[in-house]
Length: 556
Image (cartoon, rainbow, N blue to C red; front, side, top):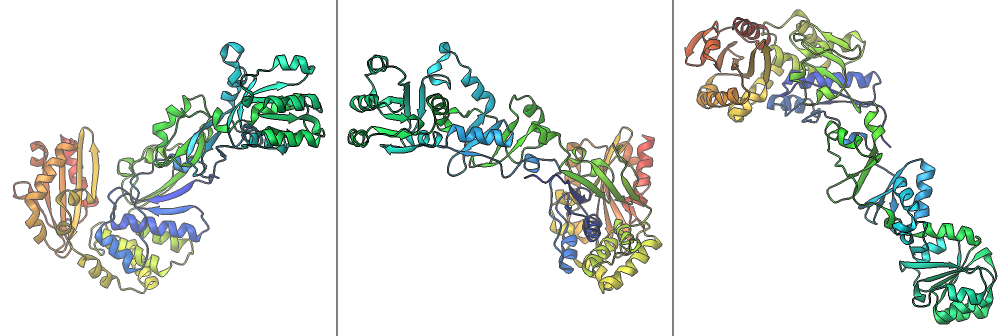
């Protein structure tokens, strides 16, 4: 059955950097240590090479990547639904519907492939058909399509003579409730192979049925049958089924002996487990039916869900780390309740329906805030988690060289060193020796790997940042990066796009900038050449570059 407790996903921003992934992982671990269930971290995109190195360095598995957080059919479906197998009787299926108080049941074959859906509403329609609406094929007509094996099962009978028990065919049912001469005139003689005679302990009718070659005689009330009659039936291949039920009950139950697939509907709405709930909601609620099958690519039944499943509590809830703006969040964030934010950026999140916990403070790294949560909560930080938090602080503060760094970042790093048993300076050297992102990635990947989008009035702009140990790789690929930046500018209809390339050894940066002539002309930086600016001492996109770009945007 479905788990009714929402799964909590701790996730950072799109195009995640090391601080974002490390903070998400460590915060999820903290909450697990404090007793939280169904909580896990995720990456809102592919992590960078340095992030991968950090997690491998401390033998910690990276959080799984998620392209979005949209709730899907698989998140609300019942993965072990009730179903009925083809070839089983209708009365068995109705019993399942009644016992489980549901209105619709999947009909499957031996390999669990969906054949159709059996619905109480459709059955009611069949039962209410009139003679002018082909009543012979309805549940109220004389004709019954079934097999002797199913008839015997439904009538709780005992076979005294049986021939071709599994053959499914049409039966014409007649009750021997009159004298034999009248009954002979009443029954059809042209197709005895379809004749089913319901009779009590009347030897004359028994012999007559055998003589005309009836397909089956159903003996009601468990009456005794003469051995001579049984032998004659065996010789003539006439089947005899003895049942404890009376004639009226036999007639009622016979109609429900048909194979369930005969009354199932194949023209049913089917859904894929990966269908987003927001995409199918309107279609689902426009249907008369309430329960819907979920089908795999091989048409196998994977589960079912109901309309009420779409109205229940969301299967996910989110904790946002290292960001609070939905535009920077994982796709689908607007569909999922946010219950907590841990961040060190400006606040720009939309209103929430319910109060949430927010930890947002002026520090250089989100990992510092998470480390403080461990310390202030009196929870010992496991050594691998301490190492992961160290890497996040080092990456986001450039080993405390960034102007965003604070005394709290330094104290947190010192505490984490002791817990991890690793020297911070040595770990810094390891992290920044990992291969150049510019050398490893395509120009487009470089521009979107750590891209942040901003809006200031009518001005839309984006800024990406990469940290390198030198500018050599940037100079080699500068023209390709600029050409890709111009394409990105046009595709996303931006007024400005900048790539901040930071030299972590020299502690300075250059800015590759494209955009409107007005925006570029107002940049307060020395132009090295066309579209390239010198930013000495600039290490922080958030604290040093962004305020200047917002100021420019505000003047346009």
